[in-house]
Amino acid sequence: MESTDDKMERRLYSHDLAPLPKEMDLIFKTMPDRVDRPQYTQDVAQLVRKAISTKTPIVPRGAGTWGLGGSVPVKGGRTLDMTAMNKIISIDETNLTCTVQPGITWKALADALDAKGLFLPCYPSSAPSATIGGWIGTGGTGIGAYKYGTAADIVRDLEVVLPTGAVIHTGDKFVPQNGAGPNLNMLFIGSEGTLGVITEVTFSVMPKPEAMKAISYSFADIMRLQVALRKITRSEVRPMHMMFGDRLHYDYLRAVGKHAPSVGCLVTCMLTGSKASVEMEEKLLDEMMTSSGAKKEPDELGEHEWSERSYEFRVRELGVGAIPGEILVPIDRMNVVLEGMAKLIKQLKLNAPLIGTVADQNTVMFMPYYLTDEHKLVASTSAMGFAKRLGDLAQENGGRPVGLGVFFAGNLQKYRGKEGARLIRSIKDVLDPHGIMNPGKMVETGTRYGFAMPAFLMNFGMHMMGSMKRILPRDRIGERELSKLKK
Ligand SMILES: Cc1cc2nc3c(=O)[nH]c(=O)nc-3n(C[C@H](O)[C@H](O)[C@H](O)COP(=O)(O)OP(=O)(O)OC[C@H]3O[C@@H](n4cnc5c(N)ncnc54)[C@H](O)[C@@H]3O)c2cc1C
Image (cartoon, rainbow, N blue to C red; front, side, top):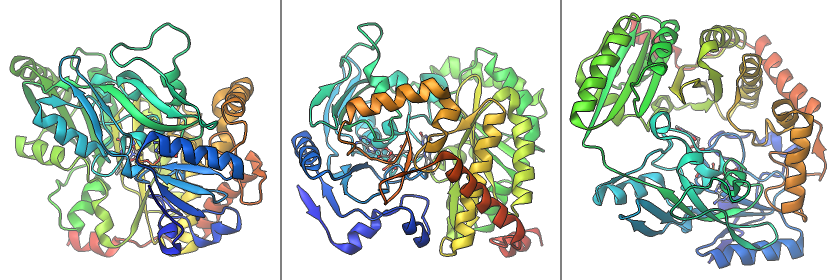
């Protein structure tokens, strides 16, 4: 097993997708003291036992593509880089399951399955880099969820090294977990690396569909999308995936020289099934979309959008950071939230394009991404003010932010109620009696000084960062490129 305390390497593990300004080190010790790259379950169990004896925090990490700080230490310790555990253990073509180590990327697995005529029911759009363990750790939704379900539906069994060093299996390899006690798979799905280290995953796969067709529709304005979604979600049509972007998203793509339409909103739906069923669904979808004010775009655009589904942040080519906020919102409230979001973006003087997906029949996932200069303290910390206000907006409308991580951990009680939060804290205490497993996340926002930051203080701080942004000049990032586009 590789292990290093090289400062340069450790620095790479002191942030995830969303860079934290250096000044955050006043509160958190984000740089791990050591980085370990286990290869086998026994390596992980051994590291956990060592951590117990030395009272050292352990932080499981996949590819670090989540932006809420889940894989970033708050009080140093050892980061377990799981990407060396990247083997496919078995692909069972008879029972349609697949068992893998957690550090494999979705893309690598999808390619291996494809060679056998098999297909992943659901995967994140960050598939080229995100790991399977990280996806399960964050609750796992994404491409395919609308038709085939999320991690909760496709995971059959997890092997987990508990914070005591014990190794357990949470389910059965071939049958789903219903009955036989509480669902242990679900205990670890979305636990953000705080209850154990996932060392092996078994999940369902599918035969590749006979036909797949991506179709794009444009709207003059994103506010018109809700009417269409109300129709589609009540119909028998089940696209595998529905994703959309707003005008600014596509304007920015064109500004960085990419092929992108000039539209108010573009929705792309992927239909899967037999040739006949895909044809029939396409007709029904056409009817629902056009009667809601959409225009059907040429097939080539649908194909292009599908091929781009994993590259949503191309606008980073402008040389800026793109910090995503992610919220889940009931479809019924989506226009109210869109209005609130536009107001927020204006108040905070941001440039924030919007992308999103239809998560299930009741829910849309909005991912506005805020363009910033990561090297400027005020600019990047104000992103937190935006994330805080965005989370509040979602909650006021029956939704919530996707995940807790470091920044929203103080809101556990807000989302789960007093007794619900108490239960989650006691589960954490029972499973992790030594407090070594990714401490300072999910149930509290820990600090480098050993005490947790009170929720009100964290929320107040994040709110103030937004207020600070309101009095600063407007962000100008990308505006030059956009104005060239308009000429
Ligand atoms: C462009 C883009 C698109 C995205 N699209 C989606 C999407 O469609 N759906 C979606 O769900 N998310 C999406 N995300 C968020 C993120 O990519 C996913 O959550 C991803 O699956 C995280 O994987 P990772 O390997 O990067 O995990 P990391 O960021 O490294 O870790 C995430 C969390 O999981 C824990 N963890 C990691 N490995 C393990 C393990 N082996 N055992 C226990 N805990 C572990 C970590 O401690 C941390 O709390 C997107 C992000 C980006 C940047």
